[in-house]
Every structure is written in C-alpha cells, then in structure tokens.
Length: 213
Image 1 (spheres, helix red, strand yellow):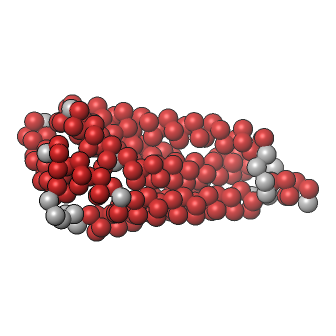
Image 2 (cartoon, one colour):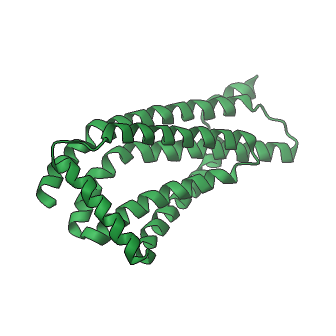
Image 3 (cartoon, rainbow, N blue to C red):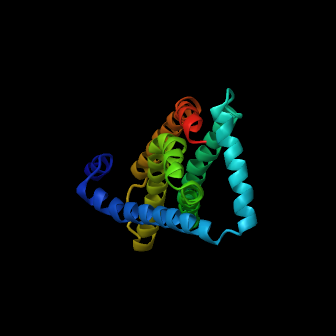
C-alpha cells in the first residue's frame, strides 16, 4: 500500500525518469523545426513562387474586410492537434508504437519550421513580423500541449517496457492515470490555443497586413 500511495504523487525518482524523455521529445521537435526551415532553401523556384503567391493572397485577405475562412481553418487545426494528442496516447499505451510518437513530434516541428522559414526567406524582416503575429500567438499554447502530451505517452511506454523486461510488475495504474490526466490537460490547452488562433491572431494579422503588404 505504501508503494502505491507514493506512486500517485511525483517523486524525485519519477522526475528523473521523465527528464531524459522530456529532453528527447524537445530535441526531436527542435530537429523538426530546423529541418523544416532548411527545407525552404531546397524548394524548387516554381513551387516557391506559387506558395508565395498563395501566401500573399491569404494575408491580403486579412488586410481587407474578410478573414478568409479563418474560423473553419482553426477548427480543422484543432481537430488535427487533438488527433495528434490522441494518437500519441494510443501509441504510448501500445508500447510497440512508441517510436511513432517521435515521428509525430518531428513532423509537427517540421511544419512550424517550414512555415516560419518560408515567411522569413520570402519577406525578410516583414516575414519575421508576419510569422510573429500568425504563428506565435496560438503556438504559445499548442506547442507546450503537444510536447506534454507526447512526453507523458512516451514516458509511459518506456516505463511499461522497462517494467516488463525487469519482471518487477510494479503498479502501472497510477502511471496510466497520470498519462491520461496530462493528455486531457494538453487537450484543454489545445482548445485554448484554437480560440486564440480564431479570435486573437486574426486581429493581429489584420492590423499588420494593412501596413506591411
């Protein structure tokens, strides 16, 4: 009973177990961001010109009176973000699918790195400002949520694998409960990030687009 009660609250041993996983999660995400930003340089000129044109149409839409379907796009983004958290949870619980969590993290970082890298590459200083108002506000909530959800799911898979390999059969329910609670908290953060993306970021984008484009 004493071991079970201790496992319900974070301990120094628990924190030491989570720290390497957290470092790995952040490293993989950062690698995705770096590779995404570098991939802009190898993009063919024709594709880059086409993307740049679409991007200008998008931002000029904010400079006018409309929001170019921003709410619908935010709902799709929320659905994709929640799907990422849920998929990470399923992969972690399956243990064998845990490496897929790292793939999810890399891809999420890649998309963000590519978006910011493309804006900066095409518009220089204006791109930095546009990236700040279009990417940063919602990702203040979305990135920590994705990292937290993926970290606890991966840590659960590692703990369960170590437990089975060592034949200790330690109580796994507290770790499972902690993983589910953190994942639920991450989902709430994603909803908050989606609200920011729908109602806050468009205001900044509209103001900035009027003066920069």
